[in-house]
Length: 149
Image (cartoon, rainbow, N blue to C red; front, side, top):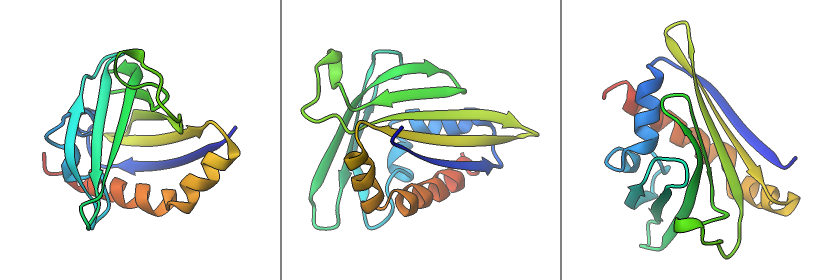
């Protein structure tokens, strides 16, 4: 399996982490490591619903991330993929499926992000793009956000 993952114990209730991943007003506050940002976020948080998060670089370049929610269990689990865009239209080049879990652990939340790739090449590309550092910084920002909302 072509998988990358990140796990962290976060001192916040899982409802807040779920909200930060699903509320379009909160996503821009944590999703990208600086100097990148989010210029647009739309979520239809239900199984089969679509998501669009547009990442914007420091020179104004934009990278739209379109996908579909495959499974949503409020405050527990989100599974999404870029294999489809809205209304089950196949994407041009599927890259990954994300599996997010939020597990209560002694008053905190065990946050796990698993990213499964279609090919070994996709996995290598994601590593080269800085998965560990990028998702790590985003998770730091996510943790800071959920402590103040």
